[in-house]
Length: 173
Length: 224
Image 1: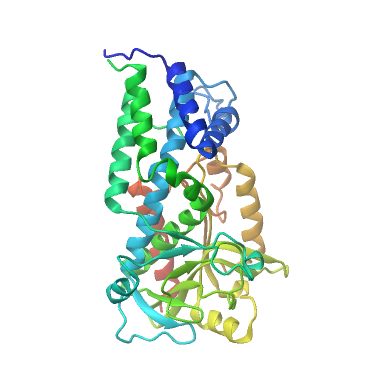
Image 2: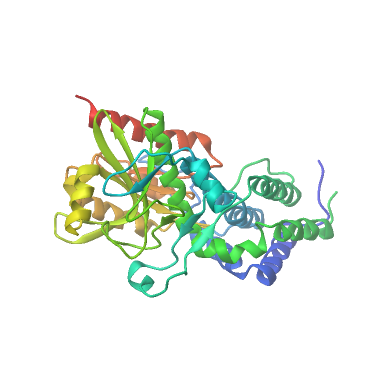
């Protein structure tokens, strides 16, 4: 069986160090998953007869590494996919007018897309409405390139295979 | 045989990606909203698959750009041209909203991350500047993006919220890209929200389950 020159602990340390340097918010999410929640997600194999049983135990280095990679994947691959999926679904919709009565009209999404650039922009306020008053342009505009999403997924898969070479394709969540 | 420097290079390559480290700050601040937008998109897909043609609308003007609420808000809000979707089925109109507040049976206001309500009721609420009642609500979902674990307290809170929405709500569910075995069991009894866990573009079958459950409920709600 092919093996790596590094062990799981070293791989985890390397990943956490890199995240700490370049994406500390993601590292915090990783640490939360490893130190807290992931513990109770471990299902006991020998639950009692009444039903499933959930135990608490320390994750192995391998499990912690897989949890960490799962968290990274959530941010690097899943979130852009949320945006692109929403964009795709929205683009398949017709475009109406103000809410009182929708108008079929000559509008269609492609025409609007050309009007605003390459794609329909999706804006997501980063404020609650109450805080939003008087803060006119604080909304985030999210848009992702589909090719970029694909290459991010490829790089994530490459990292996963490199770090967890003997673990198949199972991700821990 | 991979070396530690190979691993380091692979991590760097990922973080150097345009959707990598430079994108992290953006996504961590908006990841949950992006997840709500994703579930909103799944609702539109369900509407399309039952033969409806979703139409994007804005509260005050054409919804370009399409603006999602970033926090709980009023359906009649004029603070910004928030977007929503309208669709009709068997002569009945529906609207899909994000982060709109509803008045519960207790009188307390509750925010639903994604909701579907009757168009005629929504229009009345916008005209009269009142919050929609539970009677107008067809379906509601709590959406939680979690990089790590899912907090089970959120599930308990959502069950309480749905309980206050009364008996008219046809469909409710808790959606997350993550999962929690105990929460899945907690949602198992009848009348509890559907557990739509691991609902993510990376899991097409779970997307199909979400869409099919909604399609079935829309058909029931509009059957003559």
